[in-house]
Image (cartoon, rainbow, N blue to C red; front, side, top):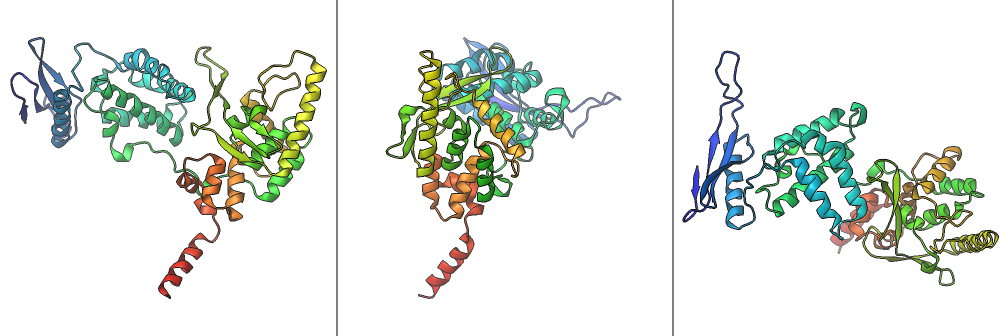
Length: 412
């Protein structure tokens, strides 16, 4: 195949190379790859760039057409230097994300961890423009069987998150003009990592009786008011940890979620975690109404906090956070989970995580007949479809009411 542009523009062809060499000196035929080859002119000099190998001739032709179109649209110019995956990721891509305010800091930390722990060790020495979908598929296969620390296999969800990082990085490489095609999009469908669907029967939450038993067991714990608030509002851990008194209206019986305090691995220190203060996951604040019991718990807590402050004198921090330690310092976000886990282990309940309080809140509301859109607004979901992805299976009588409604229509 040969594609020619007018004048001295880019042209191309596909080439089939011999397969692996046999011991007798002959070459196999079953594994011969097809290479798209772009011919172009750079400062008057004729050059060739061999693109990543393809298994089929049709795939090679498709990749060639995409490359030629990208060159015609001035979206890609083959680089004269040999940019490696490691150089691109560490010297260009990650720094560009740090300068992008639209990328959440926790997301950037996750990307950096994947790059450092998995991607660079496995693919870092490869040329960026020679990585293929097959290379990525083999990489994911190694992660599934022993790519973690100490040679342990990574979970399907972790491999899927690594794939999301790879896909974003190569997508940005295409937009930056380094590549004509994103190899992450050419990974064979059967080998492409996929995130498990959210929710469903695997969702872990408590019954109302278990929640009552846990809260009774947790009374007397200093951070009990935080656990009560999470259980009765469905707020995320970071939202509870980041709540400030200025955003709580006890007389009006509501609060506003405006800020979060989350933890992420401290890449600068090489170990440990650091606290990240940011906005809610949805990107905007939301109002959460409070029941009288929760208002009473928060009033009692505010009184206790005032007593702590009085006892400490004038050294109380000015952060204004609702939940603090005796000296006014903010608990590390992980502290909320550690306290919850310790109490849950000794309570007569099944094992869930701190985030399971959020699932419990939503599940009990939906089982009680609360409309899905109301629950979605309370949880801070973008829309009700997100809520349904998690909790559709717990909505009572949904199939029965649908069947009856259709029968009623036919009876008209």
